[in-house]
Length: 70
Image (cartoon, rainbow, N blue to C red; front, side, top):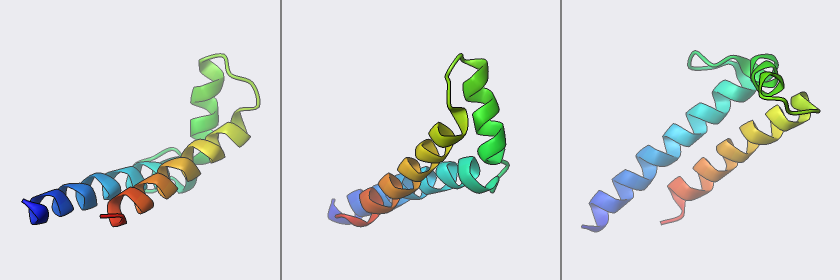
């Protein structure tokens, strides 16, 4: 049971890191900061570039911590 939970946490954490890396760097078919900022602007948000960076960093940090904190 413990091994299964560890594998689940590692996989979900890696998915979060990958999704955040796509927002920040354009990796894994992501659109980078510019693309994420454009998407946020289309939703009506202001100050979209800083918010795109915050969103990407949050996903990378949360995925790293959640995937390794078992």
